[in-house]
Image (tube, rainbow, N blue to C red; front, side):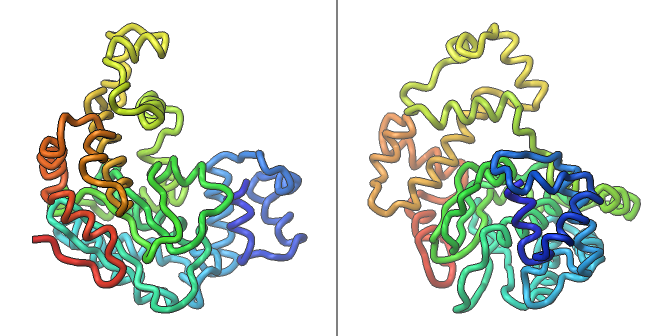
Amino acid sequence: MPMVREALLQSCPAFEERARLLLAVGIDPRLLDDPDARVPAQAYARLWRRLARYLDDEFFAMDPRPLRAGSLALLCKVAMAQPTLAQGLETGLEFLSLMFGGFSARLVRQQGLAEIVLDEGQQPPLRPFAYFTLWMIVHGVACWLAGRRIPILAVESRCAEPDYCDDYRVMFSENLRFGRPRTRIIFPAEGLDAPSRRSEDERRRFLARAPGNILVKYRDPDSLARRIRQRLRGLPAQHWPETEGLAQSLHLSASTLRRRLAEEGQTYQALKDRVRKELAVAWLAEAEVSYGEIAERLGFADTSSFYKAFRKWFGASPGQYRQLILSSGQTSQLN
């Protein structure tokens, strides 16, 4: 419901209109006053579509220029016409930059890392909901183009942290950072040069289910893999259990744990590597944390081992990445 309230804030401020819209999409208006209420993702998707038609704006009236109804369809069309995922993203971001009046977006590649950066000039930061709605659109289309979930290592926003972040962490990353010099998402660059082979029939099927599929596809808040990642993030790396110990803590046999993770396309080692990557990115953003301390926190034997692992992950050294993540002006190029 916090996301429902945010969607209505600028797009439908009058209470009577809110009530009518919510009833039309199957949401009880009385839930607006319940801070802990939840609604199905499909009900939220129906609200998004209804508001887009009501306002002729697919961005909840949060930009000086309305994102006219049909913009998502055209975004997919121009992006899928490009030969690779990277070129599709670049073209899609160019299209959105022309459509919006308050900011523009661009793709920056840094060897094994990539980021989508918003150029906002000197204007005050947007609402957190506006940033995350934009990322929902961009990331959702990128995942569709790639045919898989693109893992996000970090989300940085110029705005202050909102009271409610739970669903944003499920949709994007546990590594959300607020009050930063710029707004951007950071993700591995692997796969950006892969061919993009979406057909017109696939585009029509994708749009027929949008935005509900953007909200939930490739994301499972109740998955075993996510539960394990959350558990690992709450423990020092030195105390991460072996497979047998983890299985016992989850009241499973080791073989059942492996089988269930395999059904989700995961392994325990891959989950540990993913959490290490996320934590490394988070701590490298803290200038006062030394490389040796990060290596120790991540469970590496020494700083050299951490350097080797990081370069294998991202094709850049921790020092080069820290230069990127802490830069407040133009993004520096990694050598």
